[in-house]
Amino acid sequence: MDEHFRDLLRALLEKDPDAALEDNDRQAVMYAMLALHPSEHIAAIWRFGQSIADEFKRSYLFNHLVRHSAQCLEFDLAEGIARSIPTPYWRFAALNKVAAELLRRDGEFGSIGARNSGFHERALRLLREIEQSLSLIPDDDDDRATLLWGIGLSLVNAGKLEWAEDLASTANYCPENTEVLLRCAKTRASRDQTHHAVRLARTVGRLASTGTGQLTNRAFDLEDAAELIFDSGGKEEARRLLEEAARFALASQAQDIDGCKCVGAIAIAFAKQGHIDLAQETANMITQPARREYALQKVAEHS
Image (cartoon, rainbow, N blue to C red; front, top):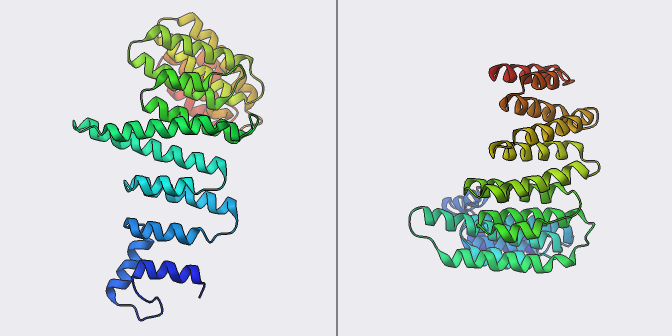
């Protein structure tokens, strides 16, 4: 038997793995298979995982182990596992998972009047560390954009909107950045910070309009920006954004599996804003019959 596997079994069973199994031993195996691990077992799995020679496989699997550990409130262990991940992207992604779970738990405790400020501050410390380490990943690497997206959403959840907006600030269209900006805008709008929300929506609209490629993403972003601006009273501006979104979405139908879905969403958005003729015209250009019928039905409900 592989020595690393033997050590793992010994940690799970707390006995010689070659001995006959009693019911308590079998229960321990069942708990392990169901991921009902005490922290000692998670640590044992971590030690076992360190025997995986392939750095990418080890990093990917440890990322999942970090998420499980954090969800079990084993934050020290989760952070330790994350820091042992050799691949920078997966290491930072795992640290962000710890931060996100700390924030989630802090919010849950806060809802019952028992907010744990230690969780909040620890999460922010991790997010600052990840941000400062992003230089290890090249600017043109998609992994960097994905990390920025993850950090940005965590910051929004932490209420750090200015920080999230600064992080997502970009001169070129990037769907990960615009999603963070839209989340900030929606949060601002929910706080009656309408002017700031509209400014962010216009920024997203400009980026999506002047970007290249990624037609479906840009169309969805324009739809979201239009909704925010419409809700603030900018009806004509919102309509113009939706018309541009429709052009992108219609062009994407032949090359993107989500293109027809996107056209349908924009048709329904036209209907919600009272532009029934535009809504019907857009819906009728959906190339998938089922999507077309669904969109026309939804448009009719707003007529």
